[in-house]
Structure formats: structure tokens, C-alpha cells
Image 1 (cartoon, rainbow, N blue to C red):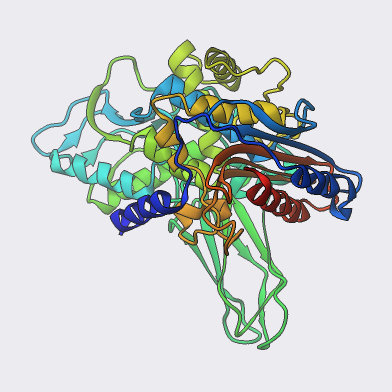
Image 2: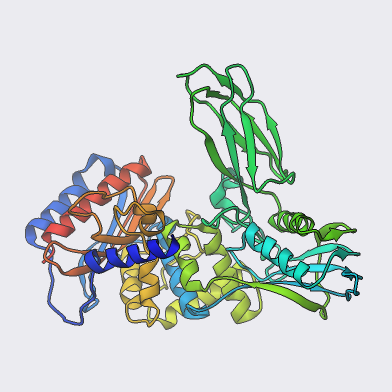
Length: 490
């Protein structure tokens, strides 16, 4: 199935996406196009009180074809991930992989008893899953290990202990996109929302509590189910919350008897402890008895590595990162850049490396503010012209096909192709013509990427909208601007 989706993606890209020509055909925005753009920017009621930054740049010459507030510093939301992805590809390389190691400070005898502790050491893999932990447990059993006489210890010292980026709001602490960052964390599925678990609420009979499930199935999270199933056709009022500093979920409200299953991704408190707890369960599932406890600690300098897990390369990790706008991958990439270049797995070191790398690529970052890697901070700022400059410079790198493949494709329903654009521009003429990164925060909307115009030529663009009354209405404005670009650039 994975190969099918990959081939489908290649087919769509071949048929519909821009082909970056080496010609230098001069393009320009027709006068009537300029008039229409100005009308949208200055007269559209959805932009009342808002600030718009727009930049359109030639893919072949790098020249700016149109700019409105192109040098104005604005909050880009998740379009900021374009800078993180570019810096990661340049710093780490498209073939970069992460390693998760299992080692011991003891030895095991002919009966399979490890006389010592077992260490699970994370090295920043943002894509580690429960299935991977199970494979590690299976490999240990194949090695003949049947008992751990000591403890199972989680080592997450590859990164520092700072769990949240500097401006993450308290209101996002339990949302899947605001997960704690650890060098040892685990995802419940292939979306790689590391440090979360999936909660399902399933309707029961009227007057009864609905059924609840957790995936992975673990007692690490406690559920307090205060909800009730109501009569068919009634409104759903479910609310799922997690208390600060606790792994306790409270489910309140109602769900109708004929309602659909409610599914939410909820963040765990302390992803390192969560991961080692799951690993211990996988060991026991495979018949490996642990006599001691499981907790967080540091592996001794000299341990014997028994088995390890290697992630997919960065080229593949970029797909869920950019397609699905995965915040956790973004922040872990920042810390990884710091670790690799300065042996400091921190936001400070990683962002310093990112800024240095972007400068070396010829991107003018002097007026930018970097607060994180995901764009979740309202204090991140850049300019529309700087975003299009980055997208132009990216074309010149040998890793550009990897970068381009990871961007969402407008109107393509397959999740890992269309990504955050799968439900936008779902019909011609914009369908499949826009390949771009989106961004959304409260009162902020953005979209930046590549477009094939009606004339068949290709352009780079960035639209950043701030101080919106409704960020979702910003998407309507963006589509209007893109439609004008499609028709009036030639």
C-alpha cells in the first residue's frame, strides 16, 4: 500500500506540478492582475484591520514579480517550518537517520538472565513507534534473553531537559501539536505525533457511560469518565482534558447513542517515562521478565550494546513533517541540529545552527526572529520576500527533490500527498497547481510554495496574513489571491 501511494504521488507530480525549467522567460503580472490583487488586499472585508504580506518571485531568475508589504515582518505560523526543513537538509543531510539503542551494564548467562540493568537510550528519533519497541523486544529474545535481573532505565540525555519551546501557550499543553520534546519519545501511529496517545469515546446505550479506549493500551494514563450516552439525534458535547502535570484524562459531556466514535490525540506528561513504561510492557509481552523497576536515568559511559533501531532517513521523515505540519518533528530537528554541530541538544544551540546554515545558503535572515522550529510562537517573524527567497535558493540544492516532494499538493485527497491542502482547492483550476506549506495560528494564516500558472509557467509565492478576525477566513482570501496569480501571471 505504501508503494501504491508513493507511485500515485509521483504520477500526480509528473502530470500536474511545476517543472522547473532552466529557461529565463520573463514573466510579469498583467496590469489587470495588479488591480485585482490590490482590490482584494485593500477592499476585501475579510482583511479589515489585517496586514497582508505577499511576494511572488520567478523560479528561473529569482526576480520579484510582485510584492506587497514584502519586507514587512509578520508572523508566518507553520510556514516557518520551511526554514527548519531547509536548515535540517543542509545540516544533517537527506540520508540522516536516528538510532535508538538497547544496552546493558552487565552480562547474561546461559539461562538468558541479564545480571545488570537494561538501558533504552534515545537519540532523538521523532518516528519511534510502539511497533519498533516490540521489534526491539523480539530481537532481545532472539539473543536468548529471558530475564532482566536489574532495572529498565530510559536515557534521554541526548537532548536537554527543557520540554517546551519558549512561547508554547499553556492552553496548548494537552493538544497533540504541543507535545513535550524528549530524545526518547514514542508515537501511537504513522502520523508520528510523538508523546501522544489516542483516546476513543464510543457511544453506548442511552443513559450509560460511553466506552473508552486508549491506544497504545496502557495504564500510564488514567481515565475519569464522567460522560453519558444520550438519546439518538441529540448533540454531542464531549470535552476531553488532561490536568497539568498529570497523566489523568477527564471526559465530560454527552455523546448520542447513534453518534460516531470520537477520537482525539492527547499528550502525555513526561514522554520519556511513558516510552520506557511501554518498552517494559513489550519486553513482558515477548516473555522477558523484568525483576526491577523502570525509570529515567543515564547509561554508564561503557555499556554493551545489544540491539538497536534505525529510523527511516530524513528524506522520508520530511513527508509527515511538512505534509502534516508536525510540530514535534520540527522541534526535534532543531535540537538535533544543535546536538550534531555543537553537542548541545537544545533550542538555543539548534536555532543558532539553523540561522548560520540559512545564511550560508544565501538567505537574508537579518530581520527575522527565531523562537522555535515549528512556527507555533506568535513571536516568530519573517518577511514574505524572505520566504520566497528561501524557496528560490532551495531549488539550487541537490536535496531539492526531497524538499519539494514533502510539500502538500492542493486538492489531493491522499493524506500523505495532499497533507494540509487535501481539503482545499479540490477542483480545477487550482487543484494540483499549488504545492505549498500552510500555516495557521489564532488570527494568522499563511501559504507559501510553488504554483504552475495558467500560461504553464511556474512561480514562487508567499502569502502571510496577520491580525485576521478569523484565521479560517484567511484561507478564503489566500485562494482568491492564488486564483488571480493563476490567471494573470504570464
